Image (cartoon, one colour):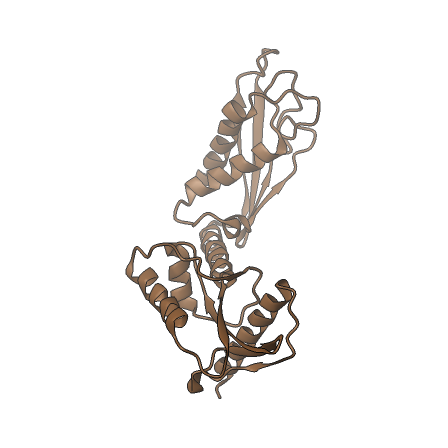
Length: 264
């Protein structure tokens, strides 16, 4: 047996065991199934009944279907396990191909078992989607020359004090990682233009996504992006500072300064 086949057997067994653990079931005995003999991937005895578990990789969208089609059922740990079908109506050839595979497993008659459970592992696709987004974002960042780039955007006033507020950004590129430092921005203000930390971060992420629109949006997309908390500035509001205008006005200026410094 080739190493990949052995790895897949261990992977399927691990997925089946995690499923049983989540269901609170401890089998009397267990073993690998032998597909060449018409058996499911995993066989165990539960309350005197021989149960087979057939493990497959599922998806929720066309994009995940493409990831599944590319990676197959690799030996990855699963965080999400479902019993039964989670498949939407197939709307393209790749989805149809995977749907057919699942339909075959559902309809197939397996030998040596009293009943069969279909265990769908969606984590493999999710892991690959996040990894693909991170790799693409890092590839874009890696094409930017290492160094520190700076720019400033202006908010006309805070609505109470007739004095401009500065959004000052120092962006440092180091390999495939990018760091955003807004700590030289204006101090907290009296009017409602203080920005909560979540809005400040979101504005940076939105700007980066607009600069690189081809990167699929998920957690992996933002992994190479590091934002230092600009404590002591109006971009890191603390209670009881007023913040009503941060999303409508200040976020736009943060996006502006990220776009400007990226064009430098």
